[in-house]
Length: 437
Image (cartoon, rainbow, N blue to C red):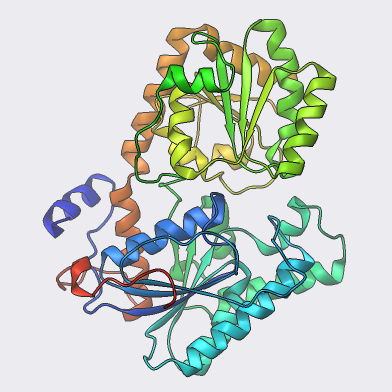
């Protein structure tokens, strides 16, 4: 996008125009996740990488041995070794994840110290931040920490451990990473406030995951055909949930609410996308026992999700714990469908009564909110328009790109002020396959 146009858009969103760094950077990125899988952090990493390569930077991404390859210019995916007894990794802390993190560290170490080309910066995500700090010291280059969540809070959200020693270890990891990183990217106001409280606010850049789960559009089957494929009537009221089945997501609450919803809207159904095969099978069994009007379709490719959104009448986020904003909320804002969400800080830091129906975090409250948007066209239209206005004013892709540039200018120059460099076009650096030769 021409720098003048980007500057005008940035001014509209309350930003100072920031151009790309003077020369494209060679970045070593550490992502301790299965990249790419259609879930929160991998989506966030994908859009971060995409913004960087659009400015001409080259990214070598070190990640787990699981996930699908993606094709982006100037990106090379380097997968760590897979231990013979590890065939996948769940969301959140786990012993398998710790083992894979060791493998990722070995791969990153070899790549960083044995590469024929010197790296200009290290960009790490989640718990790889500590490794990134160490490598940046060893190589004498700046480190950027992409903070998607609070590491100690993960222990609580995922019910992994109540060990005080482990919690103190996670707290030390987080404090050290934040203290020793030149720049910290936070993805929600809660994390920004946390970093500021640690005394690193001047080095922190808030960049919400405004792209959510957005992917390039592909032709779909159409609303009526998709509904028919899953046994749904053409005019049947459909509520859509997309996401993982972790306990903090509130799937138990949603199941209970679906039972109450049936009493208010007789033919309503809740369509659920996500979950492992075992999780989906268990959820279907419980839904049948409870008499809940639920249809589980399992995991779907990211490019299918917009078609399911088009086929539904309302979107729901029943999260019951945590403080990070669900990544899907940003996509929901632009969807043209009303959002019903639990009235918790995890949602409140983005949504309010003008952009969503916020309800108490109990089954009757959630059912009442869903019934309201399904049965009241005026309320539905009001919330949809409010959500679109919010997305336009605060959560645009232009603002996202601008803040990413700001973070990298702070990383390279120690300043986020305007420079007079010319933005670097993507074509400046030759495209490379995302797969290793």
